[in-house]
Length: 264
Image (cartoon, rainbow, N blue to C red; front, side, top):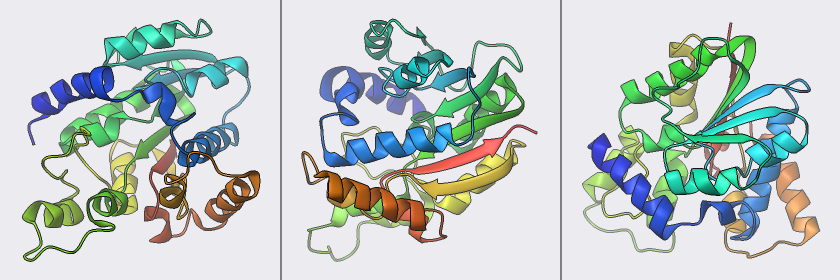
């Protein structure tokens, strides 16, 4: 997959076709689950008044609440339209930038969030560069949080509710074997991970204390079918992912996985 083409599709998709600001708020019950789970995973680890870099932070859905909690947040995103919307929040700094080339000095932050870049980067070298840049700008002992889309969910979106084709499409097989994005899909996904692959990439750039867990867990895909979920159902989904979201194999059965690691 040509990364230059993916980069062009990212600009088109997030400017013309998809309102990222709505994804974690009003689009489906999955969005609330994802938002709350991400926030709790961060809050369990970082200290008060942390200096946070939100890489690929889109319109500031996570940056804004972190700023409200008293953290000093800088958001970067490659899509100018999203950066302009993020700036309207007024509680954090937002600028256009690329995860592969962070324009900040070494040890500038306590925390780096990468909740978009990795699944938009087709080549391993670019993903490692992005993670390496995050590790570089975070001080020793600080945290890196990186989200990915699992191969399980990438395959499920293509196949659930459909009759299995014969022969099986080669790009579907490639998705399962190598994480390569299938052709003909509007979403500009470029790579889909396994938990073990994410662990290895985090380790490869020198990060330590690595853990990988599900964000939404097994109920996330079902909650995408609801505009809203009642509180009992929402709390049940949170309980489920808290109980099983760290288990090998089960952690891949989710809309998104989170890799969490420290800078040594």
